[in-house]
Image (cartoon, rainbow, N blue to C red; front, side):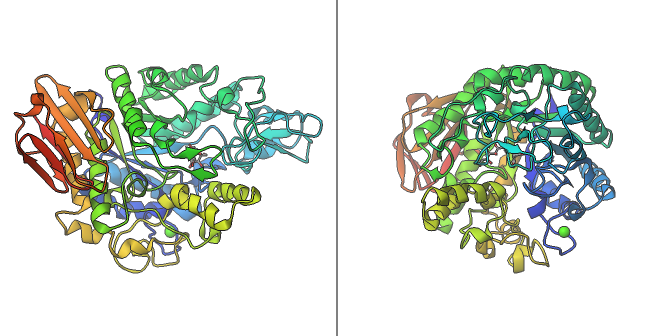
Length: 552
Ligand code: TEU
Ligand code: CA
């Protein structure tokens, strides 16, 4: 079996992980210093968000040189040392591959914008405007229009993200060859895989047609840019020319992709797996200026659908959060008291880690780190958050209400410094951190949790261990039990004669579940549990945010 099917991945957002030289910004040497912590946690692979040369408009997802390290993160020597030390300790390293777009400061774009007919013009999407308006009505995924007029030639260029992130034109073979060369460059250094940023967007419908009009006056680009006409052709070519020559872990970021498409993405000719977004979109209100509570029944359906549809066809990735998403304990659990926070963090972990697929842990998730309430928009750093906030204000939303959306959905919730200990700046930096530290680091941090056998951190360590020891977690099939149950998420995994039954209470109340006949003979001893769990007279009684997994 492929090694990545048994692996647990840990995502590092380097800017916020550990600052080794006190300039307030996490860096590569900071990761090197913390490798032993990651070994202690038990993860196998580190996915590191971008640390390439970048103006930093989107914290490194706007790359100006794919083969250089941003000075604030360190040097190429640091990067090579990180690879070497990680490998020595048995950890693999996955880089972020951001090739749907570059920075507008990338030399390709700087040349491209100079004239109508230069060599790099066709590296991007340049179009004439229509009657002094952009070439089509598309909205950028960060809010506002997706086209920017460039004074030099008067034409517009496409940017599906910020205007400093022009989209690369993958229909141009030269672009593809440049990307493949760059991938070889990193793979020859010993990199073990890639997480591919927004890879589902790399093929656009050539006519770039207007999208369906939304309340904000812009059109939806998605049907014309996501899963586009040549997407799989490009991925197969990338696989032939690059991926197939190494033993790698690859995961594509693919919002809007359905389980039916997944088996085309994740197969030996393309990628190992993809990140689906169905469970991430449940609290979204388009175009992103509002928030609603995620519906529990739909959450169960979303996750179960992927479990069932992909079984024996394609491989799942499993995640509750990343650097773009709010903290999972605040979003799907409850961070209003210590008891609820710790239990819901553990319960969410059981719910996800007992499923089939490769789990991704986002830095701090293993501590139950929470969302943050910034005082006002000036404390917010994220380009997307600032855009959506300003758009909301322009639509007449009050600053208080606009901030409320950020408290629920803002990406900076995930980007506050990693909480190492109860000292200044949570032990992340001896300087002034680039972003505010969550005040709750006095209670939530690595140091206290290491010493507490009952901590979220030690619970994660056990869960990772269970995955290593019980093949049913990797191989078993999946069945959702009581799909309409409004409080419990119950599922069963089966592998040969073995059954793994997982029951998670998503509420702050005690819930009783009548154990079905088929399970009455299950042992009293669960393989993992949290919260108050009781069994009497054929009833399972689960306390607030409790969870339990039985093996039969
Ligand atoms: O994210 C793409 C993406 O899915 C987000 O834009 C998402 O829609 C939004 O953040 C939800 O709030 C990737 C990267 O992970 C992200 O950090 C980058 O900003 C983006 O691509 C552009 O590279
Ligand atoms: Ca630093």
